[in-house]
Structures are given as C-alpha cells and as structure tokens.
Amino acid sequence: MKFRLSIALCILAAFFFGTAFAGPAQQSSPQDARRMPTGDSVVPDTVSQALLERGEKLYVRRCGGCHSLDRNRTGPRHRGVYGRKAGSVADFRYSKALQLLNLIWTAETLDRWLENPAAVARGTSMGFRLGKADERKAVIAYLKSLSDTAERQGKN
Image (cartoon, rainbow, N blue to C red):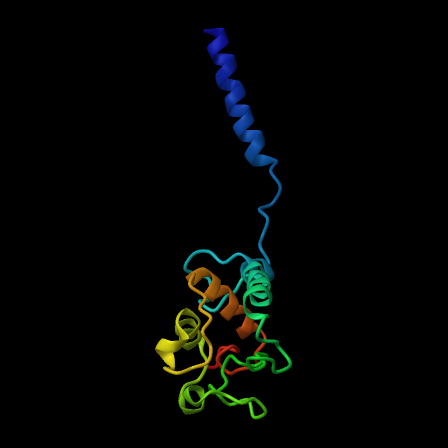
C-alpha cells in the first residue's frame, strides 16, 4: 500500500511540476505562419518558403533549358509572367497560337498550360509538359513570387 501511494504521489508531483514550471508557450510569429501554414486560420494565399525554394529549383532544372527569368531564349523571359497577358512580351517572337491566345497567366491558366500546352493553345511551339501537380504548384508559386500583380498583393 505504501509503495502504491509513493508511485501515485510521484506521478502527481511530475504532473504538477511539469505544468507549473513549464516555460510560457512559444508563440509563433507571423513569419512562422507564412512558412508553415496549417488549419483554417491560415490565409489561402499563404506560401511557404520551402515551396518557393522547391519551385525555384524545379524552374531551373525543368524550365531553364528554354527559359530565363530576365532574357528571352528559346522561350520568352518569365519574370513578371504571373498576371501578364499570354503572348505579350514585345521583343519575343511567339507562335501564332500564342499570339492569338486571349488569356492572363494566373495560377489556374499556368497550371493548365504546364500540364498540357497544346490543350490550351493548339499549335504552340512549346511541347514540354510538367505532369506532376505538386511540381506545377511549386513552379507557379515561384513565378508568382517574382511578379508584382494586384492578385499577388491580395487586391483581387
């Protein structure tokens, strides 16, 4: 009986001292919330730093053969592509399909485009496809982070 009472007192003491002397709960900063979005209280447009870094790596590896951020190559430059009208870089020679395409590059249109460019603009000269949805999401988030649009700033 004495042994059981000692164990019970030890458990109670551990519980009491564990809660009474625990440091204050660590509060997350707004920057932490931006990096690790969870739950319903997170703004839907929140993008983690890890996603942007992954998007940048994927962009260099998967898109960098034909595109650059700041100069035209086989494909047009991409800085500012998010929110821009398709086929509108003045000093790039687009295929007829892109010249006639009447859309703005948003998350949705870029996702469809990267998944299957020919389905968006039949006759496009871009044949590359980015088949994995998570890779498209990362690349789009990266491109969006490099664009200064009203939508990115939460005004739409």
